[in-house]
Length: 172
Image 1 (tube, rainbow, N blue to C red):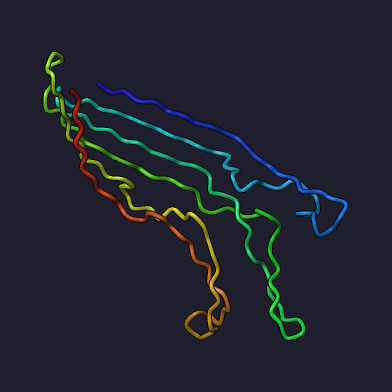
Image 2 (cartoon, helix red, strand yellow):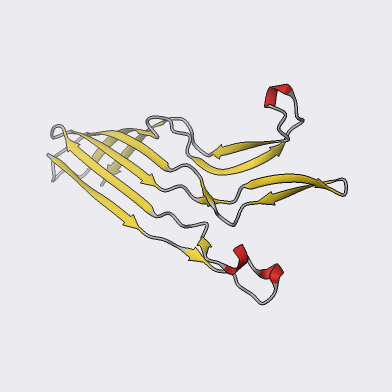
């Protein structure tokens, strides 16, 4: 027996920061994507009942990457380095996607029994994708090894490896 569900959401979220004062305006008072703007969000869940005691489950998640603001230029003025940033949230992080799998063994399948239990082995992020949570720049000493760049972009991933787990559940 195969059961499951699919959920998809398309949504947009924009902000506008306008003011009569130039220093309070963002993106010249025009609309820009909010930091929570994720146009596409997809979740798929499937459960396959292998036998009376075993079941296999999978969950796939996909969403559009979050909007971010990157530095686009740098120059020196009056002996100081100045960074020019893009319009607010002009760019996006790479899309987020992940696959989780689990195998469950039910110890007792009698309905009238006072004690029921199950064991679950699961793997979070099966294919080990390093989904970036955020990005940051770090100042570098320009050398031949970093193509004489003064800054290096780094993507920060919270979980970038498959994570196995065992779970024991009981009902009484």
